[in-house]
Image 1 (cartoon, helix red, strand yellow):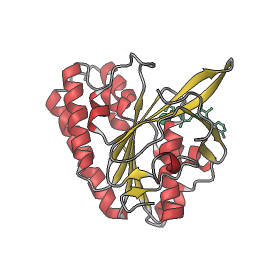
Image 2 (cartoon, helix red, strand yellow; image 1 turned 180 degrees about the horizontal axis):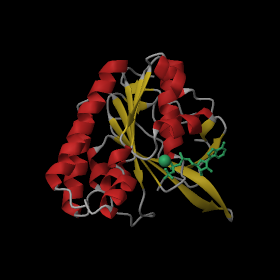
Image 3 (spheres, helix red, strand yellow; image 1 turned 90 degrees about the vertical axis):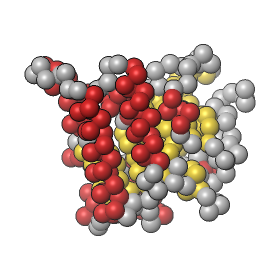
Length: 253
Ligand SMILES: Nc1ncnc2c1ncn2[C@@H]1O[C@H](COP(=O)(O)OP(=O)(O)OP(=O)(O)O)[C@@H](O)[C@H]1O
Ligand SMILES: [Mg+2]
C-alpha cells in the first residue's frame, strides 16, 4: 500500500484500487435502497478503528444513535464501546433529514428560508469539525446526502448546497465517504455534480446475471489510482460486505 492510500476495510476491495481509497479525499458511495450503503460506510469506519488505529465520525441523517448502534452490533461492530474509548463519535443530524422536513411541513413551518437551510448546513459542518477534533478522526462518513437534498425543492438551490457541502468536506483533512441514492441506472444515466466534484465514485446495485439477481459493485472512478473498473459481485452477510474482484460479471466496457 502506498502512503497515499487508506485501507477500505471492505474485504476484496483494496486490491481493485491499488491498495485502498486515496487518503484525505472524498468518495461517493452510490446505490439504491437496501444496496448496503450504510453497512459499507460503517465497515469502513469500524475496521478503521479496530484494525488500523484510525478513529472515525459518522454524520447520520437517517438513523438516530441508539438504532444505529443496535443495527451495527449485528455485525459484531461495537460502536458504543468505540465511543466510550474516545475512538468514535456519532453526530445525529436527523433533524435535517427528510422525516424532519415532512414534520415541519405538516406543522406548516415548511417555508424555511434558503438562508435558514444554508445556516443549518454550515452549523452541521461546524459540529462535524468539533467531533473530528474530539476523537482525532481520520475517517468520516456522511449517511446520506440524499436525505439532506429533500430539504431543497428548487434544483438550483439543491445543486448549490451539494457543491458547498462537498467543498466544506474537502477541507476537513479526513478520508470521507458520502453515501447517496442512485436514481437512474444504465449507460444513459446522467452524472450528478457530486460525481464530478469528488475524487472517487463507487456504485452498488442489483443486476441480473444468469436469470438471477446478484449484488454488483463498480469502482466508477478513483482519481489518481489505477482501478479495476469491472462490474464485480459483492455479498452482505453477518460479517459485513465482501467484494469478489476476480468474479467479474461483465468485462471492461
Ligand atoms: N446479516 C445479513 N445477511 C445478509 N444480508 C443482510 C444482513 N444484514 C443486512 N443485510 C442486507 O443489507 C441491506 C441493508 O443494508 P443497508 O442498510 O446498508 O442498505 P442501504 O443502502 O443503506 O439502504 P437505505 O437506502 O435503505 O438506507 C438489505 O438488503 C439487507 O437485506
Ligand atoms: Mg442506509
